[in-house]
Length: 79
Image (cartoon, rainbow, N blue to C red; front, side, top):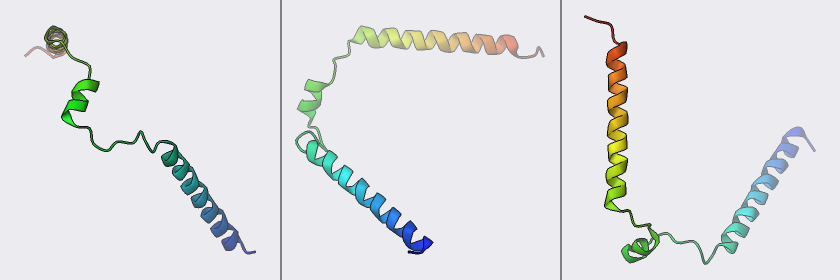
């Protein structure tokens, strides 16, 4: 067998092994694969965010942004 033939055999067998592996994974997950969740399913699965948690996160982000802007103005050369 020539070098080209061995390479082609190796590539073809690698593709075959990958196809078998993908098939086994899909077969094992056949009941768990969902391509679309309805709004009611998302509402049931998604964690409920409280308004206060969102406000706290926004306040932290604003404070961090102001700290960075303050540091930037301190580092800029005086005019």
